[in-house]
Image (cartoon, rainbow, N blue to C red; front, top):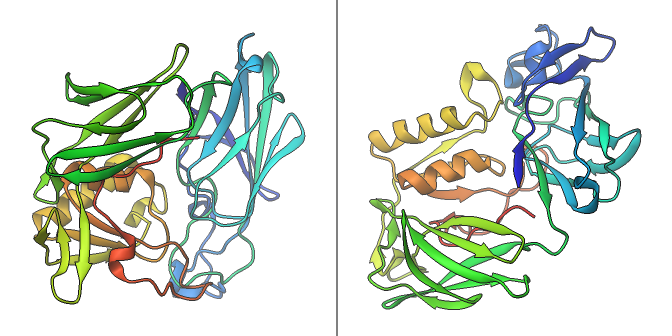
Length: 332
């Protein structure tokens, strides 16, 4: 089970007054602009700062006996997570998600979660970063012997064959096309009859459902192959593709760095309407919401792994990071 964990957080700037917020929340927008800010025009003259987020939550009797974790999709930056006063996770980088495993530490009844964020060392980027818990948070509760992370890989397209990889024992796999189950079997290689392939013009998605006696996971995926060479260029499903791409940062204009799903989908729709078929996420990993929108709407993605402002630029070629959906790892 995955629960929305975004409401009723108590946010406080260092030496400031606390207030209730709903995540995603961009703490940088809480700062007064300063003409002598070290970030200068690169961050809109917003300084960084130190912040805390607090949340009280209650859990039923059965939760402490299960695997319980909290997934943070993005916190900028230097995050430390405390549960009932005990540190349970640290994450320095601001653009990648991380999980706080609180199995055996969460207790029946009232619990207290605190997240500290330090974005005071600036400048640390050459564009607007935002601050705080700027992407969604999820509470995940699973049986300790439940479904483990799942990866789906396209083996071939004629016939359409996928490989479902998981460490889960005694699992059953079902492949769904909308409301119709089109294939089933055990983890491993599964053939999908009369399959509809995924590409930017035809973003067909299936759902893989992995079941055990006491757990279930659903993972969306597309069936496609990628090849490239100096002679043929980039090929998707055997067809040469010319990339018509643009670069986007992680922020959403006047909304700041907040990763709202509707805003992420809106800009992909606008880019599709303008004739784009590819985006480069400059210069850091994109949000889950943006990648999901690209999957649904049909958009190739170069998902950069590092922040160019603070790290050397990645040296891999564009196809090495191109994501034409076909492999997806579900939450841990």
